[in-house]
Length: 350
Image 1 (cartoon, rainbow, N blue to C red):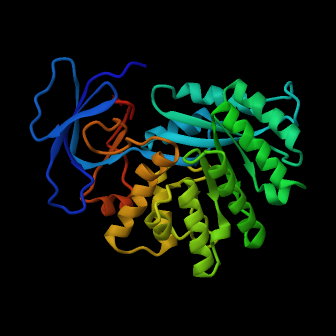
Image 2 (image 1 turned 180 degrees about the horizontal axis):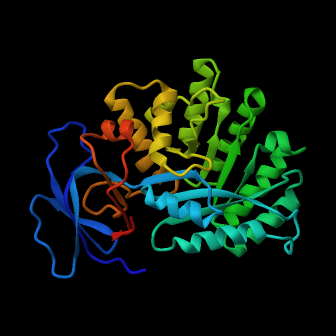
């Protein structure tokens, strides 16, 4: 879909206080071209009213459900225009194995084409054998998946080193990313996190590897935890949290302070603002600045995890935006109001 011209009247970009000035935002060619008060309307631009609302970068769901068109449509309506989700493959190794789950996800993605960007991670149901796993993942990439992944190689494979080597070699060959779900805790979890970081650095895949959940970081003594955070930062491995209730929250501030890209996902729900507030609550954050940190994780942070570097609110950034009624960023995070406007690639989509 070719991006058109859009003029958004009367919004307040990322207001940390109630006295943030109201501006207009002009988008063209999928990017933010100009921001300021009283912008002249270009002749062919569509004009919409932001009603003085809070302007944020659109939400990013870095652990989304992507196999349901209904779910993706609802996510866009709630202000999420960038999503990544895992699809568990039905086959067991051969190139002609069933990829029905991937086909469903590709079909669902097609329904929101032009309204959202959706990345699909192909994940094998079984990860016990390196060669069969790689054959299945290679087939999935050929069918349209964007990344490869899987769950807990240390606990699911008899030879996790061989398996990870094979997966990373495929990713390097295919020039795709790797997104692994690491739920193991304790020493097994620490060991596999170190293996992932080592391979990301050794194969020059910095910036193309993500680990979700990363429960191994919880419960460690500070010095050991800091070592792992430094390893993540040095290898540029991103982290995604779902802020689930069953595990200790990740050290969000420490990760961000170290320069680790951190995103938020919700593992099947629709409204990322609801999940953002859950992240706030799980972290025990009360200061407005820390609430804003969580909103940033759910917007710009997640976009950085997914490889989108210009997901922001300055001229030249990609025009993926959401407008909400409210006074400040912290206010809309706590009240979670209905979305006023949703913009993707410079076009009004909600």
